[in-house]
Length: 155
Image 1 (cartoon, rainbow, N blue to C red):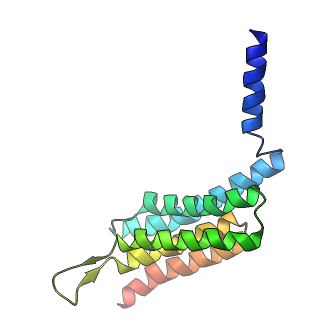
Image 2 (image 1 turned 60 degrees about the vertical axis):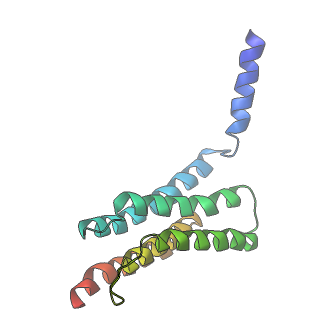
Image 3 (image 1 turned 30 degrees about the vertical axis):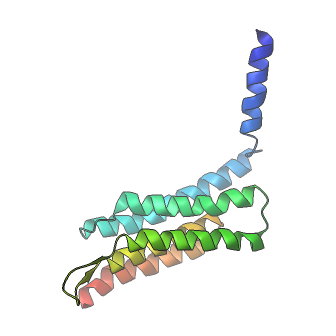
C-alpha cells in the first residue's frame, strides 16, 4: 500500500511542478491579482452606472486575458510567439463585445457600444498584467475610468 501512496504523491508533485519556487508562485499571484483588481475597478464603475456587464464580467475578462498570456510564458513560449495568442484573444473578445451591442429598430439608437469597448479595454489591461506590465496596466485603468466616469458627464 505504501507504494501506491508514494506513486500518488509523485504524480501530484509532477502535476504542480509548473511552480518551482515561492518566487514564481508570488509572480503568478501578483499578476493574476493585478488583473482581477484592475478589471474589478472598471467593472464596479460599469455596475454602478447600471450597465449589464459589470463587476464579475470585467473581472473574469481581465483574469482570463492575463491567464492566456501568463501560461504560455510559463511554458517557455518566446515572447514573439505570444502574438498569435494575442490575435486569438483579441478576436474572441471582439465576439464577446459584439454580444453586448444592441441595435434597436430605430436606426439611430444603438446601445452597448461603451460596454463592448470597456470589455475590450479590460482584456487589454489583463494582457498587460499577465505580461507583468503593471504600471502600464494601472495607467490604462486610470485612463479608462476617467473616460467612463468623467467624460460621461459631457455627453
